Image 1 (tube, helix red, strand yellow):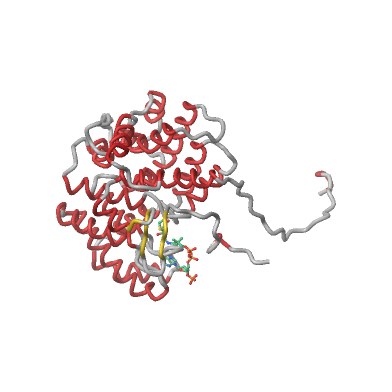
Image 2 (spheres, rainbow, N blue to C red; image 1 turned 135 degrees about the vertical axis):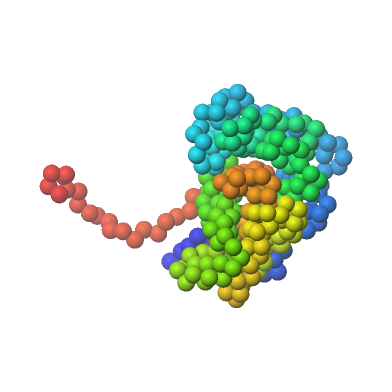
Length: 374
Ligand code: CMC
């Protein structure tokens, strides 16, 4: 009996959404290179591409953008919930619960995905996240601005000021790079739920729950914590060698599929560098530490095919853009929700309930003994 631990190398569905070439370090969404999309597209257009399989024409694009912009507002019930949450709650728990309230409000019992639910999920994640960020900072939440693009509005709601062109582009590219990544743990978790024909909100909540873990979307938070813990560039080598000697992982390094440099990390590194130069101070210091961690990490782990992944430099980008580290996984989720939805739609079109097997190695035929005789 061969058990594929962690379902490594197991294909669970055919897909036309995302292709990863883990040997060459290439990533394609619907056949388009991630490098082209990061340079020429934006979050809205790439989300359309991921969801519907083609680049939109101008009318499709404008309609999609309009629907997203008009649906950003969150209900009073969700706002009341966010106001009632303690300030040190895990932001992923808060996001998960807010999405659960959205599901309750829509009152969906089984799988029946409307266009409006798709739009609601994508458009409202940033509003929920920034509302809670502002409350934690003891600041008034900022209502969405429908004149701004998805990424620019997200930063506006977080910081209360409109982002510069560079900040907008860095955020937009970071969001594009997080939209989808084939059959990762959170996408699979959302498919397991969707395959039972449960409602879309329940599936998305499963995705958020899986993404939260430090081995998945929580790694960006862990990477920044690590850079801060290192403190100064002179400490990097000792810290990393010590960590490796103690069998601890370098957060933001390694990937199940990439055995080389993750192309998303390559793109994000350039934006992290740009923002570090613009902002200076702590951001520059952390960027320089990250660069040194990369160098030492690759020296020791590169021969095993372990290189920086998306979470390594996204941590610097998100921090430079004004997000507190605990919120990084929620930013990841706000982009990945598009990928979860696309995979759910693709899977359920030709649905089969996901029901694998566990190989039983326990005893059978044990005799039941009443509690007072045990
Ligand atoms: N630092 C040090 N050693 C590592 C690392 C790392 N970051 N990643 C893997 N290894 C080693 C691991 O110790 C093991 O060594 P050995 O064979 O000697 O026991 C070997 O590489 C294989 O590791 P694995 O855990 O069996 O590999 P996996 O494919 O199951 O895990 C991973 C992939 C991403 C969970 C893992 O590389 C990891 O824990 N990385 C750190 C956390 C992280 O950055 N996660 C984000 C992943 S990318 C974005 C996302 O999915 O959200």
